[in-house]
Image 1 (cartoon, rainbow, N blue to C red):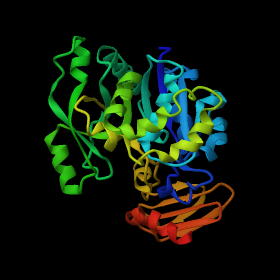
Image 2: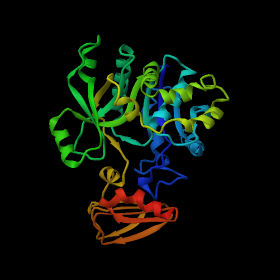
Image 3: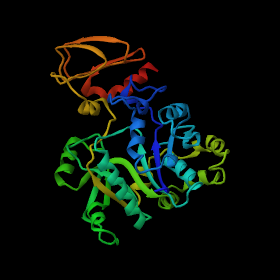
Length: 360
C-alpha cells in the first residue's frame, strides 16, 4: 500500500454556493451538510484506510494553504502543493504527478475533488481497492469511477460504457465483472437526453474520481498534452527540492487551461470505468444540497437560528450568531453569511455566478 497516492484537488472557489462559499473561505473548507466536518476533512477520512498519511497531496491555491493545514493537521507542509493561478484540472494533476515522480516512480494514484459526498464509505473503499488491483495488471489503463444513475440528472457528465465486461485481461472474475471499457464521454445533457441515457442502461455519471499508475498518466500527458509536458519538463530537477515552488510560481501560468477530461480522457482509447453505487453526490449547487439535507414537515432545509412560518420546499441557511424570521416562501433559497445575503427562487440558482459578478 505504500506506493498508493491520493491527489486531492482543492483549489476552487465554489461560487455557486455564495454567500457561504467566498474567495477567502471556499466551499471545500465548509461544513455545508452539517456533519461536523468540512468537505476536505471528510474526503481525507474517506481515503485514509487506503492511502498512508504521508502519501496524500493536496493541490490548492496558495491563498488556501493555511486552511488545508488547519483542516488536515496530519499533513506536512510539503504535502500541500500551491498553484499560483487556476489552470483547470489537467495542469493541477500534472503538477502533482511530477511531484510524486520525484518521490516514487512506481506510484499508483487516485485523484479526487475535495468536495463530494459519499454515504457508504466501506463500499467506496472496496471500489478504490478494486481499481488499484486492476492497475496492477493493466498499468497503462486510465480509470474513472462511474456512478450508477438514480435519475435523469442534467448537472453531471456521463460515461457511455461498453456492453461487455473485460475479457482480455488475466485476472479474477470479480474484476472482470466490475471493470468495463469506456466507449465515450458525454457532456452534461438536456433533460430529454438524460432520460434517454438512463433508460438505455449503459450510461454512468462521471464522478471526476480517477485512478492510474504514475507511468500511465505520464505517458498519456506526453501523447495528448505535449505543450503542457514541455512546461513541466523545464523544471524536472526542481521537483521534490526547495526550488520546486519557485519554478511553479514562474512557469505554471504557461500551462494550457484545460480539464483532464478534455485533455486526456476523451482522447485516450485506453479508458476504463468501474460502475459503482456508494451514495455519491457532487454537492455542487444549492439544489443538490437540498436533495441531501434534512427537512422539516414543510419540506424546508433549515440551518441556523431560524423561525420558519408557512414556508415550503425552501432552503434557509443562516450563519451562527445571527437570527432570521422567514414567512410565506415556496421553492426559495435564503442564505446569509459574513454580511452577505442571497434571496432567490431555488430554480434560478444557476444565475448566482452571474449575479455576484454585479457585486464586483
